[in-house]
Length: 348
Ligand SMILES: Cc1c2[nH]c(c1CCC(=O)O)Cc1[nH]c(c(CCC(=O)O)c1C)Cc1[nH]c(c(CCC(=O)O)c1C)Cc1[nH]c(c(C)c1CCC(=O)O)C2
Image (cartoon, rainbow, N blue to C red; front, side, top):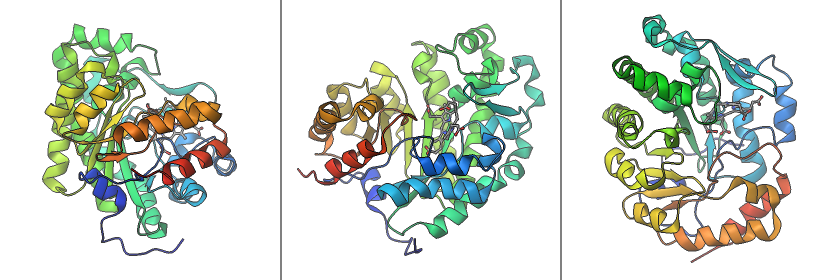
Protein backbone atom coordinates (compact mmCIF):
# COMPACT_ATOMS: atom_id res chain seq x y z
CA UNK A 1 0.00 0.00 0.00
CA UNK A 2 1.36 3.44 -0.90
CA UNK A 3 1.30 6.21 1.61
CA UNK A 4 -0.81 9.10 0.32
CA UNK A 5 -2.06 12.52 1.37
CA UNK A 6 -3.04 12.39 5.07
CA UNK A 7 -4.12 15.99 5.30
CA UNK A 8 -7.60 15.90 3.77
CA UNK A 9 -10.37 14.59 6.00
CA UNK A 10 -11.34 10.98 5.27
CA UNK A 11 -14.96 9.91 4.73
CA UNK A 12 -14.83 8.40 8.22
CA UNK A 13 -13.68 11.72 9.75
CA UNK A 14 -16.39 13.68 7.92
CA UNK A 15 -19.12 11.33 9.16
CA UNK A 16 -17.79 11.48 12.74
CA UNK A 17 -18.09 15.26 12.49
CA UNK A 18 -21.77 14.96 11.62
CA UNK A 19 -22.15 14.46 7.85
CA UNK A 20 -24.52 11.77 6.57
CA UNK A 21 -23.10 9.38 3.97
CA UNK A 22 -24.82 6.60 2.07
CA UNK A 23 -23.21 4.13 1.81
CA UNK A 24 -21.78 4.74 5.29
CA UNK A 25 -18.12 4.17 6.18
CA UNK A 26 -17.47 0.71 7.65
CA UNK A 27 -14.97 -0.91 10.04
CA UNK A 28 -15.36 -3.65 12.66
CA UNK A 29 -14.45 -3.77 16.32
CA UNK A 30 -11.68 -6.41 16.76
CA UNK A 31 -11.25 -6.51 12.98
CA UNK A 32 -7.67 -7.78 13.37
CA UNK A 33 -7.81 -11.13 15.09
CA UNK A 34 -8.20 -14.85 15.18
CA UNK A 35 -10.90 -15.16 12.46
CA UNK A 36 -8.13 -14.27 9.95
CA UNK A 37 -5.71 -17.10 9.00
CA UNK A 38 -2.97 -14.53 8.30
CA UNK A 39 -3.41 -13.22 11.88
CA UNK A 40 -3.10 -16.71 13.38
CA UNK A 41 0.08 -17.24 11.35
CA UNK A 42 1.59 -13.90 12.48
CA UNK A 43 0.54 -14.48 16.09
CA UNK A 44 2.37 -17.85 16.13
CA UNK A 45 5.63 -15.90 15.66
CA UNK A 46 5.48 -14.33 19.13
CA UNK A 47 5.65 -15.82 22.61
CA UNK A 48 2.74 -14.12 24.26
CA UNK A 49 -0.09 -11.81 23.30
CA UNK A 50 1.38 -8.72 24.98
CA UNK A 51 4.80 -9.36 23.40
CA UNK A 52 2.95 -9.32 20.12
CA UNK A 53 1.28 -5.98 21.00
CA UNK A 54 4.68 -4.51 21.98
CA UNK A 55 6.41 -5.59 18.72
CA UNK A 56 5.93 -2.63 16.35
CA UNK A 57 6.47 -4.74 13.20
CA UNK A 58 3.97 -7.42 14.19
CA UNK A 59 1.39 -5.00 15.63
CA UNK A 60 1.56 -2.84 12.52
CA UNK A 61 1.23 -5.84 10.21
CA UNK A 62 -1.79 -7.15 12.19
CA UNK A 63 -3.41 -3.69 11.89
CA UNK A 64 -2.98 -3.70 8.10
CA UNK A 65 -4.22 -7.26 7.45
CA UNK A 66 -7.97 -6.57 7.56
CA UNK A 67 -7.49 -3.36 5.52
CA UNK A 68 -5.80 -5.29 2.71
CA UNK A 69 -8.47 -7.96 2.73
CA UNK A 70 -11.63 -5.86 3.08
CA UNK A 71 -10.64 -2.25 2.35
CA UNK A 72 -12.32 -0.94 5.53
CA UNK A 73 -12.59 2.86 5.91
CA UNK A 74 -10.67 2.79 9.19
CA UNK A 75 -7.88 0.73 10.73
CA UNK A 76 -7.64 0.36 14.51
CA UNK A 77 -4.17 0.02 15.94
CA UNK A 78 -3.47 -3.51 17.08
CA UNK A 79 -3.00 -3.32 20.85
CA UNK A 80 -5.16 -3.99 23.92
CA UNK A 81 -6.91 -1.99 26.62
CA UNK A 82 -4.90 -3.89 29.26
CA UNK A 83 -1.59 -2.28 28.23
CA UNK A 84 -2.55 0.48 30.71
CA UNK A 85 -2.50 -1.63 33.91
CA UNK A 86 0.58 -3.40 32.51
CA UNK A 87 2.30 -0.04 32.03
CA UNK A 88 1.26 1.18 35.49
CA UNK A 89 3.12 -1.75 37.04
CA UNK A 90 0.36 -4.35 37.43
CA UNK A 91 1.62 -7.03 35.00
CA UNK A 92 -0.91 -8.63 32.64
CA UNK A 93 -0.62 -12.18 31.27
CA UNK A 94 -2.82 -13.73 28.62
CA UNK A 95 -3.35 -17.43 29.05
CA UNK A 96 -4.27 -19.41 25.94
CA UNK A 97 -7.98 -20.17 25.91
CA UNK A 98 -8.43 -18.53 29.35
CA UNK A 99 -8.09 -14.77 28.80
CA UNK A 100 -6.31 -12.04 30.75
CA UNK A 101 -4.89 -12.64 34.25
CA UNK A 102 -3.60 -9.99 36.68
CA UNK A 103 -2.70 -10.24 40.37
CA UNK A 104 -5.79 -8.52 41.84
CA UNK A 105 -5.22 -4.94 42.98
CA UNK A 106 -6.29 -4.01 46.52
CA UNK A 107 -7.59 -0.45 46.89
CA UNK A 108 -5.15 0.19 49.75
CA UNK A 109 -2.23 -0.55 47.37
CA UNK A 110 -2.94 2.25 44.88
CA UNK A 111 0.40 3.86 45.61
CA UNK A 112 2.10 0.89 43.93
CA UNK A 113 0.76 2.10 40.58
CA UNK A 114 3.22 4.38 38.79
CA UNK A 115 1.87 6.63 35.99
CA UNK A 116 5.45 7.84 35.44
CA UNK A 117 6.14 4.59 33.54
CA UNK A 118 3.48 5.08 30.88
CA UNK A 119 5.37 6.82 28.10
CA UNK A 120 8.42 4.53 28.18
CA UNK A 121 6.44 1.32 28.60
CA UNK A 122 4.04 2.20 25.78
CA UNK A 123 6.66 3.56 23.34
CA UNK A 124 6.38 0.39 21.14
CA UNK A 125 2.65 1.08 20.67
CA UNK A 126 3.43 4.60 19.44
CA UNK A 127 6.13 3.23 17.15
CA UNK A 128 3.59 0.74 15.70
CA UNK A 129 1.21 3.66 15.08
CA UNK A 130 3.76 5.76 13.15
CA UNK A 131 4.75 2.78 11.01
CA UNK A 132 1.13 1.92 10.31
CA UNK A 133 0.24 5.52 9.41
CA UNK A 134 3.04 5.58 6.84
CA UNK A 135 1.86 2.30 5.28
CA UNK A 136 -1.89 3.06 5.19
CA UNK A 137 -3.68 4.54 2.17
CA UNK A 138 -4.41 8.26 2.70
CA UNK A 139 -8.18 7.71 2.65
CA UNK A 140 -8.05 5.20 5.51
CA UNK A 141 -8.34 6.58 9.04
CA UNK A 142 -6.22 5.20 11.88
CA UNK A 143 -8.07 4.82 15.19
CA UNK A 144 -6.24 4.89 18.52
CA UNK A 145 -8.06 3.51 21.55
CA UNK A 146 -8.12 2.85 25.27
CA UNK A 147 -10.38 1.25 27.85
CA UNK A 148 -12.53 3.53 30.01
CA UNK A 149 -11.56 3.78 33.70
CA UNK A 150 -14.45 1.62 34.97
CA UNK A 151 -13.72 -1.18 32.49
CA UNK A 152 -9.98 -1.10 33.27
CA UNK A 153 -10.74 -1.12 37.00
CA UNK A 154 -12.85 -4.29 36.63
CA UNK A 155 -9.85 -6.20 35.25
CA UNK A 156 -7.45 -4.66 37.78
CA UNK A 157 -9.54 -5.47 40.84
CA UNK A 158 -10.93 -8.90 39.84
CA UNK A 159 -7.72 -9.87 38.02
CA UNK A 160 -9.79 -11.45 35.23
CA UNK A 161 -13.02 -11.20 33.23
CA UNK A 162 -16.11 -11.87 35.36
CA UNK A 163 -19.71 -12.03 34.09
CA UNK A 164 -21.14 -9.19 36.21
CA UNK A 165 -18.11 -7.47 37.77
CA UNK A 166 -19.35 -8.24 41.28
CA UNK A 167 -15.85 -8.06 42.87
CA UNK A 168 -15.28 -4.54 41.54
CA UNK A 169 -18.79 -3.29 42.34
CA UNK A 170 -18.40 -4.57 45.89
CA UNK A 171 -14.93 -3.02 46.32
CA UNK A 172 -16.10 0.32 44.89
CA UNK A 173 -19.16 0.55 47.16
CA UNK A 174 -17.13 -0.48 50.21
CA UNK A 175 -14.46 2.19 49.69
CA UNK A 176 -15.76 4.84 47.28
CA UNK A 177 -13.11 7.44 48.14
CA UNK A 178 -10.20 5.17 47.32
CA UNK A 179 -12.09 3.86 44.28
CA UNK A 180 -12.53 7.46 43.06
CA UNK A 181 -8.77 7.90 43.37
CA UNK A 182 -8.23 4.83 41.19
CA UNK A 183 -10.74 6.07 38.59
CA UNK A 184 -9.06 9.49 38.46
CA UNK A 185 -5.60 7.97 38.12
CA UNK A 186 -6.89 5.79 35.29
CA UNK A 187 -8.68 8.69 33.56
CA UNK A 188 -5.46 10.73 33.55
CA UNK A 189 -3.40 7.75 32.33
CA UNK A 190 -5.90 7.01 29.56
CA UNK A 191 -5.93 10.68 28.48
CA UNK A 192 -2.12 10.70 28.30
CA UNK A 193 -2.13 7.46 26.27
CA UNK A 194 -4.79 8.74 23.84
CA UNK A 195 -2.93 12.03 23.29
CA UNK A 196 0.31 10.13 22.64
CA UNK A 197 -1.50 7.96 20.06
CA UNK A 198 -2.64 11.12 18.24
CA UNK A 199 0.92 12.53 18.36
CA UNK A 200 2.12 9.26 16.79
CA UNK A 201 -0.35 9.46 13.87
CA UNK A 202 -3.90 8.43 14.88
CA UNK A 203 -6.68 10.62 13.46
CA UNK A 204 -9.61 9.33 15.53
CA UNK A 205 -9.98 7.78 19.00
CA UNK A 206 -12.31 5.24 20.60
CA UNK A 207 -12.88 4.71 24.31
CA UNK A 208 -14.25 1.24 25.19
CA UNK A 209 -16.45 1.10 28.31
CA UNK A 210 -17.26 -2.56 27.70
CA UNK A 211 -18.56 -3.14 31.24
CA UNK A 212 -20.47 0.16 31.71
CA UNK A 213 -23.73 -1.80 31.81
CA UNK A 214 -22.82 -3.49 35.10
CA UNK A 215 -22.97 -0.20 37.05
CA UNK A 216 -26.18 0.66 38.93
CA UNK A 217 -28.20 3.84 38.46
CA UNK A 218 -26.38 5.75 41.21
CA UNK A 219 -22.85 4.78 40.22
CA UNK A 220 -23.13 4.88 36.41
CA UNK A 221 -22.82 8.71 36.11
CA UNK A 222 -19.89 8.82 38.54
CA UNK A 223 -17.73 5.92 37.40
CA UNK A 224 -18.65 5.68 33.72
CA UNK A 225 -19.81 9.06 32.37
CA UNK A 226 -17.94 11.54 34.63
CA UNK A 227 -14.68 9.61 34.34
CA UNK A 228 -14.96 9.75 30.54
CA UNK A 229 -15.84 13.47 30.67
CA UNK A 230 -12.48 14.02 32.37
CA UNK A 231 -10.67 12.11 29.59
CA UNK A 232 -12.53 13.87 26.76
CA UNK A 233 -11.77 17.26 28.36
CA UNK A 234 -8.03 16.55 28.55
CA UNK A 235 -7.82 15.14 25.02
CA UNK A 236 -9.84 17.97 23.44
CA UNK A 237 -7.68 20.50 25.29
CA UNK A 238 -4.66 19.18 23.37
CA UNK A 239 -6.27 17.91 20.17
CA UNK A 240 -9.54 19.78 19.61
CA UNK A 241 -10.07 18.42 16.08
CA UNK A 242 -9.61 14.70 16.67
CA UNK A 243 -13.00 12.94 16.77
CA UNK A 244 -13.72 10.78 19.83
CA UNK A 245 -16.02 7.73 19.72
CA UNK A 246 -17.23 6.36 23.05
CA UNK A 247 -18.74 2.88 23.47
CA UNK A 248 -20.62 2.49 26.79
CA UNK A 249 -21.72 -1.10 26.21
CA UNK A 250 -25.11 -2.07 27.65
CA UNK A 251 -25.79 1.41 29.06
CA UNK A 252 -29.47 0.72 28.28
CA UNK A 253 -31.85 3.63 28.89
CA UNK A 254 -28.95 5.62 30.38
CA UNK A 255 -27.46 6.12 26.91
CA UNK A 256 -29.28 9.41 26.28
CA UNK A 257 -28.01 11.04 29.51
CA UNK A 258 -24.56 9.59 28.86
CA UNK A 259 -24.38 11.29 25.46
CA UNK A 260 -25.66 14.59 26.94
CA UNK A 261 -23.01 14.48 29.66
CA UNK A 262 -20.00 13.23 27.69
CA UNK A 263 -20.73 14.95 24.35
CA UNK A 264 -18.49 12.62 22.30
CA UNK A 265 -18.31 13.01 18.50
CA UNK A 266 -19.82 9.55 18.09
CA UNK A 267 -21.35 6.88 20.28
CA UNK A 268 -21.10 3.11 19.76
CA UNK A 269 -24.41 1.22 19.93
CA UNK A 270 -24.40 -2.34 21.31
CA UNK A 271 -26.90 -4.71 19.69
CA UNK A 272 -29.56 -4.19 22.39
CA UNK A 273 -30.03 -0.46 21.61
CA UNK A 274 -33.54 0.12 20.26
CA UNK A 275 -34.25 2.07 17.09
CA UNK A 276 -36.00 4.77 19.14
CA UNK A 277 -33.03 5.22 21.46
CA UNK A 278 -30.50 5.04 18.61
CA UNK A 279 -32.35 7.63 16.53
CA UNK A 280 -32.80 9.89 19.55
CA UNK A 281 -29.06 10.02 20.23
CA UNK A 282 -28.29 10.35 16.51
CA UNK A 283 -29.98 13.78 16.67
CA UNK A 284 -26.99 15.09 18.62
CA UNK A 285 -24.06 12.78 17.71
CA UNK A 286 -22.92 10.33 15.05
CA UNK A 287 -23.84 6.71 15.88
CA UNK A 288 -21.81 3.57 15.14
CA UNK A 289 -22.53 -0.15 15.30
CA UNK A 290 -25.56 -2.11 16.50
CA UNK A 291 -25.25 -5.32 14.39
CA UNK A 292 -25.22 -8.48 16.50
CA UNK A 293 -21.87 -10.24 15.77
CA UNK A 294 -23.77 -13.56 15.80
CA UNK A 295 -25.69 -12.49 12.67
CA UNK A 296 -22.29 -12.25 11.00
CA UNK A 297 -21.41 -15.76 12.17
CA UNK A 298 -24.77 -17.15 10.98
CA UNK A 299 -24.73 -15.37 7.60
CA UNK A 300 -27.49 -15.75 4.99
CA UNK A 301 -30.92 -14.22 5.55
CA UNK A 302 -30.21 -13.40 9.23
CA UNK A 303 -27.24 -11.29 8.18
CA UNK A 304 -28.91 -9.62 5.18
CA UNK A 305 -32.00 -8.65 7.21
CA UNK A 306 -29.93 -7.37 10.13
CA UNK A 307 -27.83 -5.17 7.82
CA UNK A 308 -30.91 -3.85 5.97
CA UNK A 309 -32.73 -2.94 9.17
CA UNK A 310 -29.73 -1.00 10.50
CA UNK A 311 -29.10 0.83 7.21
CA UNK A 312 -32.79 1.69 7.03
CA UNK A 313 -32.79 3.07 10.57
CA UNK A 314 -29.57 5.10 10.55
CA UNK A 315 -28.54 6.02 6.97
CA UNK A 316 -30.35 9.38 6.98
CA UNK A 317 -27.98 10.80 9.57
CA UNK A 318 -24.32 10.51 10.58
CA UNK A 319 -23.69 6.77 10.89
CA UNK A 320 -20.69 4.40 10.83
CA UNK A 321 -21.42 0.77 10.01
CA UNK A 322 -19.98 -1.60 12.65
CA UNK A 323 -20.91 -4.48 14.93
CA UNK A 324 -22.56 -4.11 18.34
CA UNK A 325 -19.43 -5.68 19.93
CA UNK A 326 -16.23 -7.32 18.67
CA UNK A 327 -16.11 -9.83 15.82
CA UNK A 328 -15.71 -13.38 17.19
CA UNK A 329 -13.02 -15.90 16.12
CA UNK A 330 -15.49 -18.35 14.51
CA UNK A 331 -16.73 -15.73 11.99
CA UNK A 332 -16.49 -16.99 8.37
CA UNK A 333 -14.47 -14.63 6.18
CA UNK A 334 -17.01 -15.06 3.34
CA UNK A 335 -19.69 -13.51 5.58
CA UNK A 336 -17.51 -10.45 6.21
CA UNK A 337 -17.03 -10.09 2.43
CA UNK A 338 -20.79 -10.36 1.85
CA UNK A 339 -21.49 -7.79 4.56
CA UNK A 340 -19.00 -5.27 3.13
CA UNK A 341 -20.48 -5.76 -0.36
CA UNK A 342 -24.06 -5.28 0.89
CA UNK A 343 -23.18 -2.14 2.87
CA UNK A 344 -21.17 -0.62 0.01
CA UNK A 345 -23.97 -1.34 -2.51
CA UNK A 346 -26.54 0.49 -0.36
CA UNK A 347 -27.78 3.99 -0.99
CA UNK A 348 -30.63 6.07 0.39
C1 LIG B 1 -12.38 -5.80 27.20
C2 LIG B 1 -11.34 -5.60 26.12
C3 LIG B 1 -10.06 -6.22 26.04
N1 LIG B 1 -9.44 -5.75 24.90
C4 LIG B 1 -10.27 -4.88 24.23
C5 LIG B 1 -11.46 -4.73 25.01
C6 LIG B 1 -12.59 -3.78 24.71
C7 LIG B 1 -13.50 -4.30 23.65
C8 LIG B 1 -14.33 -5.47 24.07
O1 LIG B 1 -15.17 -5.30 24.96
O2 LIG B 1 -14.12 -6.55 23.48
C9 LIG B 1 -10.01 -4.12 23.01
C10 LIG B 1 -9.15 -4.71 21.96
N2 LIG B 1 -8.44 -5.89 21.98
C11 LIG B 1 -7.76 -6.04 20.81
C12 LIG B 1 -7.98 -4.89 20.02
C13 LIG B 1 -7.18 -4.69 18.74
C14 LIG B 1 -7.64 -3.97 17.61
C15 LIG B 1 -8.82 -4.53 16.87
O3 LIG B 1 -9.96 -4.21 17.28
O4 LIG B 1 -8.63 -5.19 15.83
C16 LIG B 1 -8.88 -4.07 20.71
C17 LIG B 1 -9.51 -2.76 20.30
C18 LIG B 1 -6.91 -7.19 20.42
C19 LIG B 1 -7.10 -8.48 21.09
N3 LIG B 1 -7.19 -8.70 22.45
C20 LIG B 1 -7.26 -10.04 22.70
C21 LIG B 1 -7.19 -10.74 21.46
C22 LIG B 1 -7.18 -12.27 21.30
C23 LIG B 1 -5.90 -12.85 21.86
C24 LIG B 1 -5.01 -13.57 20.88
O5 LIG B 1 -4.90 -13.29 19.69
O6 LIG B 1 -4.31 -14.45 21.40
C25 LIG B 1 -7.09 -9.78 20.44
C26 LIG B 1 -6.95 -10.01 18.97
C27 LIG B 1 -7.33 -10.66 24.06
C28 LIG B 1 -8.20 -10.03 25.07
N4 LIG B 1 -8.20 -8.71 25.43
C29 LIG B 1 -9.16 -8.48 26.40
C30 LIG B 1 -9.77 -9.72 26.71
C31 LIG B 1 -10.89 -9.91 27.71
C32 LIG B 1 -9.16 -10.69 25.89
C33 LIG B 1 -9.39 -12.18 25.94
C34 LIG B 1 -10.64 -12.57 25.29
C35 LIG B 1 -10.39 -12.83 23.83
O7 LIG B 1 -9.50 -13.65 23.57
O8 LIG B 1 -11.11 -12.22 23.00
C36 LIG B 1 -9.45 -7.18 27.02
